[in-house]
Length: 344
Image (tube, rainbow, N blue to C red; front, side, top):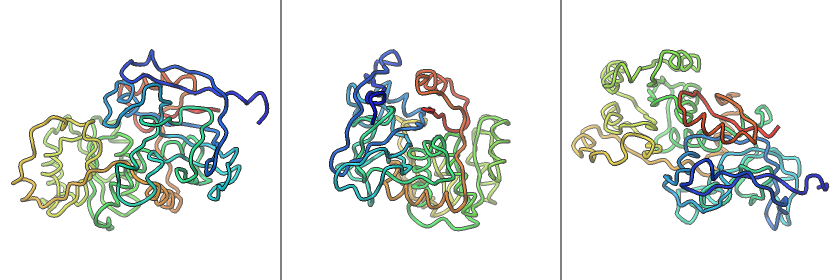
C-alpha cells in the first residue's frame, strides 16, 4: 500500500449522544493478522437500526467510541497468514454477526458489527475470513451493501421452519427493507404475496415488484380481516412481521401458519399487552423470532439471488462524508428501499 493510502477515514459514535457525536476521524490503515483479510469498503447501507444505535436504544450492548455500521461491501486488498477462503481482488460483503457461521443463534456468537465490535463505516477494515461472503459479479458494490442485514433477515424469515411452497400465501407488513426483500424472494418462490402499505404510490411500486395484493393499512386498520377476505377465510401461510402489531398477524395467519417476528422493538408491540394464549392456540400458528442470520443464511441467499438475478430496491445514494445527511433522511421517513453510502 503506497504512502498516500496509508491513512484512512472512519466514523465513530458515542451511543445516546446523537448525530453531533458521530465523528469522521482518521487513523492508519490496519494490517491483517492470522486468518484475517483487509477489505477496502466500497459501499455501505444504513437504516433505522443505525438511528437506534445512535440513540442507544438498541437491544444489543453498544461499545462507546465504536465504528458504526453493520452493512458493507468491498474488495480484499491484503490477506494475513493462513487465509484460505479469499484472495486479493475478491469482492466480498461482511456478515452482520461475523462469528455466527452456521446453526442456531448462540450468545457466544452475538458480537455484532457496529455495536459490540467495530463496524464497517470506514474506508478499510480488517475482518476474520470466516465473517465474509463472496458477492455476485452481477451486483454492484452499492447493491451488495444492501444485503447483509435486511436481505439476510428476510431470507431467514422465509426459510426457517417448514419450506415455503409455490402457491402458498405470504404476507409482509409495510414497505421497509426487510419487507421488500421478503416480497421479492416470495414472488420468485412462486408464492402469492400480500403486502400492507400506507400510500397509493408505494402500492404501485410494490405491484411492480410482483406483489399480488396490497392493503392500505391507514384506510383499513383492520388489515388482518382484509387478509382473511383475500384468502377466502384461510389466512396467510407465512407472515413476515416487521411492523406489528403481532396480535393482528396472528389473526391473519392460516391454521398452522408461521409468523417470523422481526424487530419487535420497531413495531407497536414493544410494551404492549400480552398475547392472548387462547388466540394463539386456536390459530395454531408458530411465532418464530428472527435475529438477522448466519453466514450460512447469507451464502444461501446469494445463491438464490444469483439464480433469479434479483436486485435490491435502492432508494437513495449518499457520499461517504454525507453519512449524517443520510441518517437524517432515514429519520424523516417516507423512503422506499435501502439507503446507500458510496465510497466512489
